[in-house]
Length: 139
Image (cartoon, rainbow, N blue to C red; front, side, top):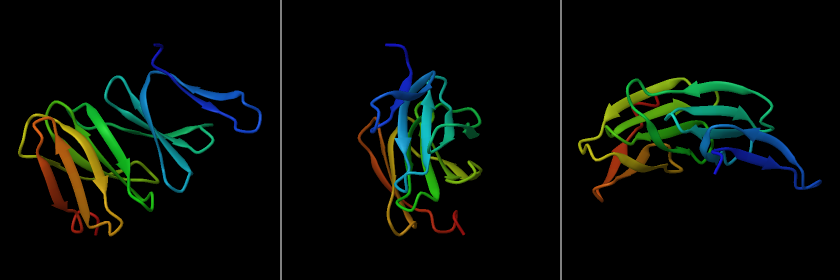
């Protein structure tokens, strides 16, 4: 395994871009952005053609383990593996909008923003499912 993600052209079948040091990739639902999760716990926000990286999302002391775009692709939610840090980011610029510590310290392994953009769900290694009201953080 070389820890890279490859983007392929559906028309030609050729690889059009290799994102090095990539553990996982997330696509915005509008198809305009790609989040590439690096092995060092950072996320890089790429244009839809992956021709340039326009932001790097990095939690202060946390390795980002999971990420998800909101249904309208305007918000990115992330969760920290080691410390349970939950963060919200601007889906267009990569600017951090809010961050808080989940009560459990077992690490956040999944995050999803609902269509209303007021609700965030996170799950942790210990099986805990949390529902967060994020409306204030996004106003």
